[in-house]
Every structure is written in C-alpha cells, then in structure tokens.
Image (cartoon, rainbow, N blue to C red; front, side, top):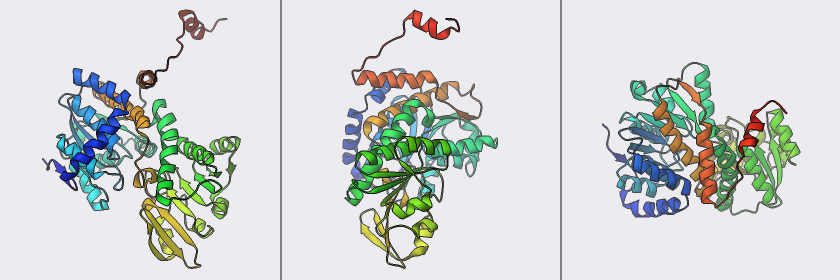
Length: 417
C-alpha cells in the first residue's frame, strides 16, 4: 500500500477548505445527491480512483463519494490545473491525494500510479489516463475493476478507439455524452471559462479582434458564441462538412486554417485532435497573434514546431510565453498550450459543474450496481439519470414545467390518428 498522500504543502488546507465551501454553496444538485448518499451509503466498501482536474468543484464530487461510503483516492488530470490548497484540504478530510501544481511529466505519471496503488473497484477518469494505465502498465489491477466513468470528449474518443479494437476490458459510462453534460458543460462552461482564462491572462480587449475557433463541436460552439458576444469577428475552422455548414448558418465565416492563420488575432483550438495549428500556420500569422488551447491535451498546437521557429522565447507575463521568430514576428502561447480555462483560470463555472458532477455521482453508482450486467465497452448514461439531474437543477432554480396528460402520452405513443 502506498503512502496516503503526496502533495505540495499540507499547511495550505485552510485556504482549500474555503474554496470547497464556496463551491459547495453553489452546487445544489450535487448536494441533494450527497444527502441521499449519506443516508443510504450505496458505495460502502468500494474503492474509487479519481483523475479529474483537481480543484474545488472536483473536491465536492470526491467528498460526496466519500460520504456515500467509498474510500477515495484523487489525482489531477492536468499538471497545471491542480490547486494545491484544495489537495491539502482533501488530505485533511481523510482522502488519499496524489497531485501538485506544475508536476513534471514523470511526477504526473507517478501520481497516477500512486492513485491506482490501493486497487480501485471503480474509476472516474477525465481524458483517459487512468484507463490507459490500467490497460498497460497496471494490468495486474484489471481483475478488481468493476467499471468507471469518463468525463470529457477526448477521453471518450480514446475509449471508443480501444473498444473498436476489442481492447477495453471493463464497462465505462460516457458521462460526457449525456445531454445534461455536453449541452451545458461543453457549451456554456467551456464558452465562459475559456474566455475567462484568456482575458484574465492577457488583459487584452476581445472586441474588434478576429478570433479563430478550431473545431465546431459543442465546446467550439460555446467558445465562438462567447467571442461573438464580446464583439469579436469569429472565423471557424472545421473538417466536418455538417459542422462547417452549421457554423456558416450560425453567421460565422468558415475558412481552412491556412487562410484563417493570415487574419486571426486570437486562435483557440477545441478539436480533440493533434497538430491543428502547426508550422505552416505559424509562418503566416500576424505579429502578436495569441495562441490558446481549449482541448484536453496540449497537442492541438504543435509546440515543437513553434519552438523550432523561435530564435528567442521568454515569459511575457504570468502564463504567457513569447516566441520571437526569425523575421521579428512575435507569437504568444497561453498556459503552455494546456487547457487554457484551467491552466490560466478556475475552470468551468461552479453551477455548470454541479450538473456534470451530479451525473458523475449517479453514473458511478449505476456502474457499481450493474457491473455484472454491463459488458466491457462504452455505455451511455441511462436516460432516467440524465433527466433526473435536469429536473433537480430546474427545481433548484425554482422553475416549473408542464407535464403530459395521459391522453397526450397515449397520443404520442400511438401510430393512429
């Protein structure tokens, strides 16, 4: 059994407690589920390993699962998104915690392994790193894993790729694909938090600038909408003709990246793919162009090709690195090319993560209850859980909706007139 925690500074716990309490006050849906879990202890005796961006909202999820009876081990899913005070507060709460801000690649991998060392029954992943380890270096733990959940688009893509090859050894529920997640978290959460990170880091005006959004999935839609709302002219780059057509009909200019590179002032990637902005594009960009990534991994902006073109690189301000090219142009990279909303900000708004983490709590309970029935592979969140989270959120907002009468239900269920 590994040590119970590896964190930066236990003395930071009081600050972390404040952050957690603030988040909890604004998470009514998760709080309702936590009350139910505390009474029924549905996860009593289970061990849950969590790899999610380690900040206050994630702490509320981890503590909810602890109060459901589980033993919980937590690590981050991105070295720059871990908040050391929150990690310290969770240790004080008795959880196993293995993470610190600014971890090297080697330290990050060690933290993931330490999180798995206690032999989890269930995993909650964000990006797929825990699942990858369990199928490679930590296959010794596979027999004890009942299943898990995945939080984000990139992680679901990795799971489906493994599933296609018949290489996924346990059931995983794609929380990202639930309506109560992607319609709100991916669109409104990413939209607001991405611009929060960019603006607080650069202190630059968005109005009047040309913003290039790479990818028009639900994250890209949110980023584009918020940029337009801030007064930017938005250009969308896509590889999917249907999404490109939708972007055009939403009023945005659609261009290939080689053309967008010439006109953009701020570039934001949100594709889940690699090398979206690369050398040939850097060669065409304006002096002063800003580069930000809103995808899970720091591969969407090709950092080696950017570095290779620089004759000088230096910090311009906190979380902003200046790359001076041979012709004197300067390009500015935010947050090392990592998730800009977390590397340069506090991530999604609390009320948005209330929905996502309520789904996570209900979904991991569902996996545990039905593990014997679920085949290895990727599964959807049951519709009744999705609807329940939406109903709880509406109730917390004091919003009432109509209900179908029996006659209306019969009409909708009938093929007759």
